[in-house]
Length: 538
Image 1 (cartoon, rainbow, N blue to C red):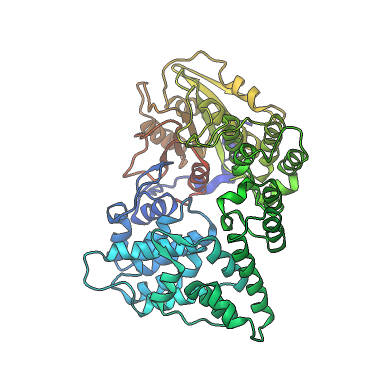
Image 2: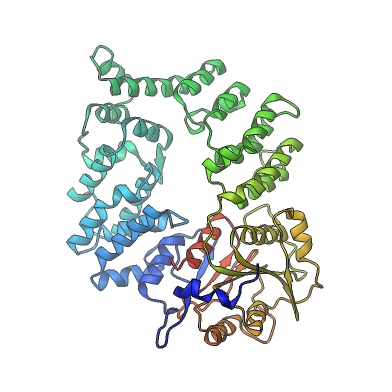
């Protein structure tokens, strides 16, 4: 459906009033970018970079201005809403706030620890960031406030959930649960947490001695039974015993030994409770280990689950997530090339079916979009960090917007040519990709979609441009074209340029315009970044 000026009243929040500057980049804007994807710049890179004080200057500026409590609340809010595409930036920011000179900021950071650190690896990473921030200082990090915050983190956990966590996520970055309990002088809040703490610090044999002849509570009995199962699995070579323990106690893959995964019975047991996303990642491994053999009942069961609309809805999988899983599986080898397999045709068909069924999982942003795909000769590579071709990735995302956003216009463009494309609900991914390459190829000109909309007077909330790694080869600068378009139509339109194979783009204005952003590569995080920008959250 083509966006039109008549719908402008439904999107009044995007209109630009006289004297207003909605595109201004403030320190809070930079902070939100940092918390979302780990950089204050208007560039999202699928390759995650090491965080340091030099990458969080806006955070430091806000703290210097006495806005530490505001920063902590923003970290907490975004984490609770699930907006960050990476966990580490929020953990880094919280660690910095927890060491600030302002008492209220420090207290707020420690109170927010349980809300931001959802799993043990988050807690380990937070502690490591605190340690790195303290390097060069005479004082240590384990003051009373941190000891209490870490102790509270363990005590706030559900006992069975904590038993799973400490046996699944044992260490991270050189830290272990034993380290944290020892250094925090943690005092367990109840009997079940006491049991788990003893297991962590003293080991299973000490737990057996202390609890075998003791009259235990119902919760303690459950925890003991679970921990016993974990310990039995660690020392068992009997695949039937291991598979039975997995089914009875819902043990997960991370709690098993590597050799256990050579057993078909073990894989069968794991699959019964394995999350959909984890199962898709393990398809290659299961095929390589000959658990999934052509025509067998296990393949049929996996295919049935992959295509289950109820299971896909529960997993909330995005179509692009399934597409990446499908392309990775078709490749026939792991990322490092060590694990190899012969892709099963039935599984490939099931993944293809799941791709289309997952469109119902996409929550519309309710904006007016122009999705423009560069069809120059360069759109024939592989998306950085994936097994997906740039043409297929662009076609898939064009489908996502065309099917889920009521006001979306898809364009194919090349030097001097731009063609509106019609994408109907019944079209396949192959048909959409074919539709996009109808016009002759040429040089990339990323300004064309904006100039096209401006010339036709079409109101657009956000331009999303898919190209390879080229910025522009035309006479017009896309950023300048966007500013002129805004002025002409009186609307705060945004621009997202997706360089699918790029290691660095430079279209977006990094300093003065929060309505422009570049993507280098493309992954699931990029999809969330697009949504966050569309909804004015970063």
